[in-house]
Length: 233
Image 1 (spheres, rainbow, N blue to C red):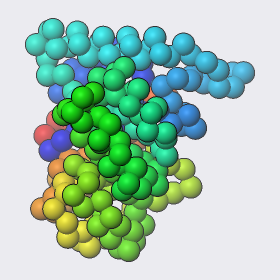
Image 2 (image 1 turned 45 degrees about the horizontal axis):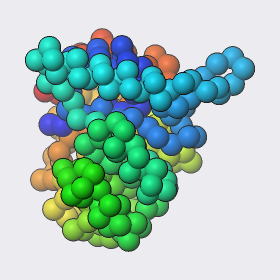
Image 3 (image 1 turned 90 degrees about the horizontal axis):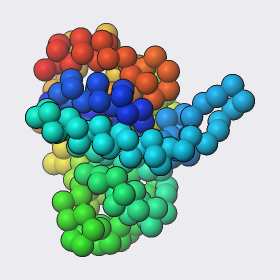
């Protein structure tokens, strides 16, 4: 089972999460997210964080894990209706392994993005397309991306773009009859380990963890993650 921990930005927190043996770490490049890698919260509001440097330190932390012979998680950049040139820049600057598209990105946009990245900039880049799910008809949108993306991510349909902590009814995924592997997301919390283990689908590849494992936006509770991972692994 793939375990992806999303919404990371603090170098030391990333280092500790990476030691748990997870498979993917997600960096959110959507400015409106409280987990946006270029901003931090402060009493005065949202202020600049010099976070280009901060994310570089996070990248260095992952490299240090590799030097210590720990398995280094893959890096996923999360984007919402962003300009392709911005995505390409992030892929290059932060050596991203995955681009996760969490907005209303069209097939044409995705194909153009792939042509720009492959083979010259990131020949091994993989594309994850997130779909917001409430009912079976939402699941059927996967057909738009057949043959275009490498993985799907099913998240809870809500007023925000992910990170709501809310769950959807996983039984609606019975309507998914495609052959693209998917990650299950949307409000998975520490108490859901048994539910995850009982979930069955031939294309179920793993889970995406975020807000329910936080002590503050973008700060993950290491002990909660450790206990949960031990149960589902």
